[in-house]
Length: 424
Image 1: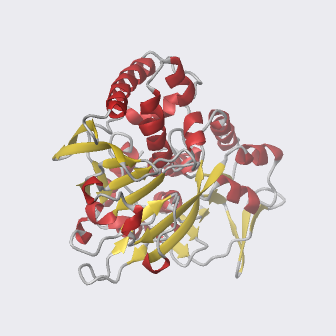
Image 2: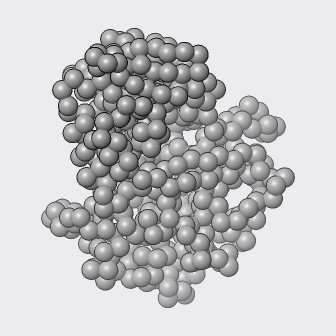
């Protein structure tokens, strides 16, 4: 078959790579390079000449990312454990809590302590964390979470508000890159699934050579890659036997088209969407996300002793927590370089002369309607004679991360050719 994949984020790269094993595949990408690495920053640092940094930073832990882990193993992508300890600070810059993890090989022993051992607030956070983990694990095992949001669950369980507002919701908002209100509306089952999949027992890991190495491995197996493609519309032929992709240099017809873009972007491109297709795609919601690469230490905790690899700033007057990653602590090749930071959802602007990269994204939201939206998408995929498909981090259950993107790509490949999917 002749298949088009639109979008070269991780979902598009994996879908095109998997399908290229048996078919002629064209991967269309609007950027000059695949979207998965389009925002990466190349450094001009004497201590690390030519080194690139992923934007956003891409880390994982095997318990919640089993499909991604198997994919990396199949590709021969080397990974390494990283320290992802986190400091939580208030608007005044004072650190009130720190999550640490002692690593032993591929395993991690978490321990949580107030930054000030005399802090009553800090100890209530510890107590809340222990109660939450025990109650969430028990409720998940008993199937009692149902359709409750995490906000409803912690209220019903009377979990300490110091933990909920000071640690749980900021952590969910940081992982899912959403607002605190969005985090409160997250399904309790999704949060519990992430928290109990081994994040406390396994080391956070990264691809040793970054997203560029992952992209190179996948690109090597794809039939044809067309960057700067400028796809403007997709429509089916009158007899529904082919699908036409209109792009900057003309039109091409394919047997199948896989949208590996955001749902809202796919809806805008599909010129002849049926009512059920339009309704399903419109049901997925997104929030804007900003990421800054910079060297401004003012966005870190004021006391150097409070610096962690990840530093969350939690302020009630801001809709979302700010997260500043100390890249030198996460990427070993930069350990001796000039301090470098990546700030996600910034509450403050770094000095203009310190900024070396600026990227904007949209991230899928998960809420009460997500299950119904996913079910509608699966009903579309199950329709006989289907020739248009969708994949991406939004298209599978769970927190929309690399894992769900890869799972969705392999699921579409399986739909197109049952029994052929690899790392699933």
